[in-house]
Image (cartoon, rainbow, N blue to C red; front, side):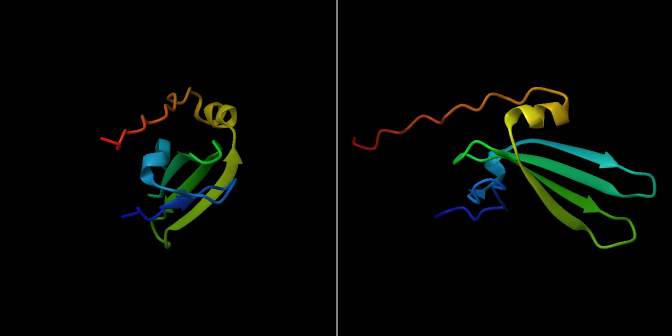
Length: 95
């Protein structure tokens, strides 16, 4: 069964899932608004997409996406290095 994409790459349009998320953050603002930002790395093209969810205290929540970004741009925005992405080993199914 294929997993339904949670997000789409801003660079190439490929589907992204929570497994492609590499970083996230949360901010709380005066007045009760919360902002959640997640960064996704596209396994197809290697670019990054940002998704921002804002839970507003007195208004409906909203979601916006931004990108594409390079790894260097994401690390600069986060102020830290991202974890090294390693390819998953290919399983030998011939046995």
